[in-house]
Image 1 (cartoon, rainbow, N blue to C red):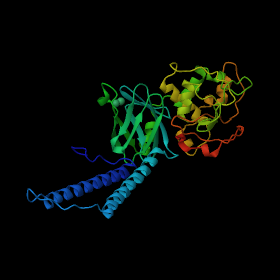
Image 2 (image 1 turned 180 degrees about the vertical axis):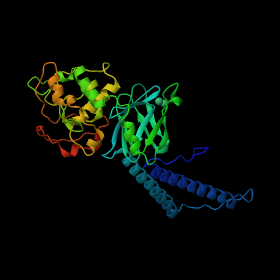
Image 3 (image 1 turned 45 degrees about the vertical axis):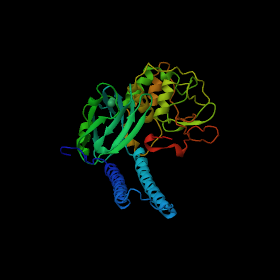
Image 4 (image 1 turned 30 degrees about the vertical axis):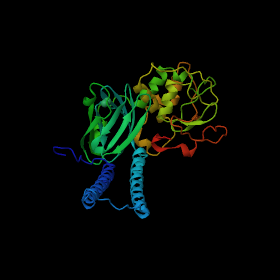
Length: 381
Ligand code: CUA
């Protein structure tokens, strides 16, 4: 890593696999280059024109030769494809025990928010040896979250969430770069990922925490008046939020949607886009009234009252009692009884065409289809 950073350190679990694949591709391309160049030089010399009026004999094609140079490269290309696809698939699926961290990019900084409440600018503290799942969005233009030493790169887009994950393998400080041109100071949109030992990390977590995103979200739920409709009594005018996260939701007009981060975000900003079956589309849009950080906080809250997931207890600190759904409901202006957890309903195909078919039966309160429980919540079609 001295001087020319031709071989950056391998500091994450995918780094070595990515490097081996890259090496394979470089050597393969190099071997073919050498082969083609050598054959060309050989033919240039061997079949050069020896006299001005020489007429060479005609040579017909060779089926054997053509089959050889078709089948072997095809096979090699398929090897590279499946090898890369495997790595890509693994890099796309965060392990269930991943720590959740949210990232909001803007011109020209990275804002990082931890589940425990820590907020950071252009820095991200993470423990070594634990997978970290990033949920990212942009407040303005397209940015790209790139950590060369981890071999991860993911575009960060306005208007939707993208995710990626990594597991750092050794403590240290690693460069975070924006790798999508995003305006004048794009090249200064840099940060650091600080990988700490578990002990140091625990120590770090115990300092500087403000409010956890989930508890901020609980507060916003009151502030924006969400609780006046999303309640659990006879005055309820909107579907419940409990046990919603990561579940399939049945939509008016047929179809289903998975209540992941993108779905919740869309339902806040454009409630009419996917109306839950059995409910009136009465919710106003919150576009322009709520910022990206607040949406992330609301999602964190909805996650915290969502169905149990493996590893969940590790990432979500217990909310103070005042933020439980019951406490929130009862502190709502009109006061309301304790909500009963009910699963959600659904929507139609997500952007990109994927949708999760749900049996066309009546939604059964309290029952959540097991298939929809994707650990970590990254339900991406
Ligand atoms: Cu942000 Cu380039």
